[in-house]
Image (cartoon, rainbow, N blue to C red; front, top):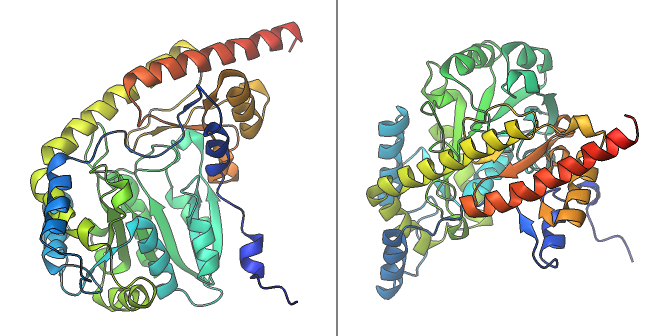
Amino acid sequence: MRNPLSDKVIKMKPSGIRKFFDIVSEMPEAISLGVGEPDFDTPWSVREEGIYSLERGRTFYTSNAGLLELRQAICEYMDSRFHVAYNPKTEALLTVGGSEGIDVALRAMLNPGDEVIVPEPCFVSYVPCVDLAGGVPVTISLKNENQFRLTKQELEAAITKKTKLLILSYPNNPTGAIMTREDLEAVAEVVIRNDLYVISDEIYAELTYNSGHVSIASLPGMRERTIVISGFSKTFAMTGWRLGYALGPAMIMEQMTKIHQYAIMCAPTTSQYAALSALRDCQRDVENMRESYDQRRRYLLHEFEEMGLPCFEPLGAFYIFPCIKEFGLSSEEFATRLLNSKKLAVVPGDAFGACGEGFLRISYAYSLEELKVAIGRLGAFIQELREESTKAGI
C-alpha cells in the first residue's frame, strides 16, 4: 500500500504543551499550572443567553460570516475600546476560536514560498499554520533583556525580498510581554516601508495591567495592512464556546470568508447569540477577572523574588516566564523532574520556540489558594536543586 499520509504533516512536531498534561491526567494529587484557560465560569448572563437561544430553537446555520448583529457589536466594541473602526458587513468574520482566524488568514494571504516572520517565544500554532499554508516561517529569537518585545532592529534584520507577513502576538503567550505604543510605532514604520502585512493576535487585549492595550491596527497607515485576530475565550472565560473573530480590509476578508465557507460553514450559532450578551452586559465581569489575575500576578512576582528566581514583570495575559538557567537543566528536564518529584506541571519554555530554552511558562489562571500550594512545591524543588549544586561543589 502507498503511504496515505502527508510528508509535511508527518514532519510537524506535536504541541509541546500537551505532553505534560497527558501525564498529569493520570497522576493523583498533581497540580497543573500549564493550561492557558480561565478558571472563572462563563458569566451567567452569557450562559443564560445561550440557553435562551436553544429554547427559542435558534439552532440553524447563520450566514458564513456570522450574525450581522454580533459583527456590528464587535465593530462597536473595537471602535470604543481600541479606536479602530471596521465595517461589520465587509470587514468582519466570526471564526471557530481565534485559532481558525489565524489559519484562514494565512491561507488567504500566502503564495508558496512567501516568508512569514514569527517572533518567538510564541503560541505553538503559528509556525505549523505557516507551513500548512505553503509559507516559509522565519523566526526571530526575542530577548529576555528586552522583556521579549520585538525591536525595530530585529525586524529589519529578518526581512528579505520574499517577506510578506509579520505575526504579532501581544499581550504575549507565553511570556506575558506587551508592546507599548512607542514599540508598535517603531515596528509599524518598518512594516510600511517594506510593504508588509501584519496578523495581530490580540486575544489577550483586555488582560493588560498598568496600561491599556494598543492595537497596531489603530496606528496611522496600519489599518489597511493588518488582520486583527481576537475572540471571546480569554476575555469572557468562554474557551469551550469556540468563538473568535477576524477584522481587516474587505479585500482580504472576502477571501478569508470564502475559505471559512468551504471548511467550516459558520461559527457555532448558540455561541454567537451568547457572545452578544458578553459584549453588552459583561464589562464588569471582565474587570473583576482582570483584577483577580493582577493580584495573582503580583503574588507570583513576589514569591519568585523571595526564592531568587529571575523573572521580568509580565504586563499582560495570565502567564509568567521565569528563568531557570542557573540550575544547568534544560527546560524539559526541569519540568519533568518537577512533575515527577513534586507533582507540579509547568510548560517548558522551548515548547514556544528555541529561544524559550531556559525558561518555564507558568499560568496564573488558577485560584490564589491553588497557586500558594503550587509555589510551595516549586520552592521546595528549587531548594533541593540548590542543595544538590552545593554538595557537588558547583
